[in-house]
Image 1 (cartoon, rainbow, N blue to C red):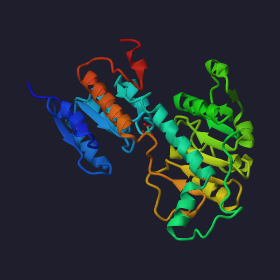
Image 2 (image 1 turned 90 degrees about the horizontal axis):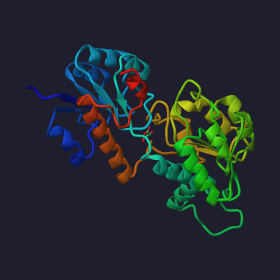
Image 3 (image 1 turned 120 degrees about the horizontal axis):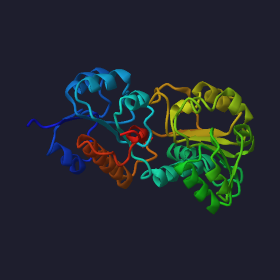
Image 4 (image 1 turned 60 degrees about the vertical axis):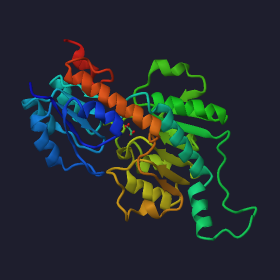
Length: 329
Ligand code: DGY
């Protein structure tokens, strides 16, 4: 019997991948950049399983082409799966795996680091020291913003949003949260209070995005929303770049409508090298690394392998992004 074939769009931890390369025929894209769309489309024609990253566009054409042949499962090494045409997959009962839960605290740690770095101007001041601009201590030199006792506004209040609220308790912060669909189970969380988006934007010193990308959250921050924010407030994004209108953000920072921003995500990634945000000393940009610790990324890789193995064996995926496909089975 011929071995099943897995298409892998990015190589990862060799010792974890070996579990697959030993048992299956694997075709692994060897470069650091994502493979061309055409490469995925050509190779999906004889693949039983597909391992993807959030940088791959897995649209209806790739899914239906795969399904016309042998495709049984897609397993993504990320919790978010907005790059995949999930509705098409669900309509055909094709399971999509993802990696929820394991990156919650790691991502919240990083969002917190961005809050601290923005408020206390850590990147900007480091750059000044490096450029020998530091002369002496002075009472007004590079004053930042207090975090302790400030108000944190969380857009999205799922696992990561709640992990942010827990951290905020240690800093004696007031926490406001907004979610497009208000959930009764969130009302009982002690240190966080529901607010409309407008109330949150008007009242927060730090606005941090923690939602899934959906039609309701795409460009949720634009000109109108930035106008509502305090002039002293910072915008933090570790979710998805498409949630922010970046032209509006440039305008807001240039015109001092907000104090600054810290973005770990952009849309599309990477941010163009000549983008005006890269020239602003009060904007921090990092390369989509909020979940990037070795422990967490290894856990994500292991879950990705568990999902693909289950799917290829015709079993229910342990971490499934579209579990509704199992409802009528
Ligand atoms: C995800 O998993 O969706 C993050 O954006 C990357 O870890």
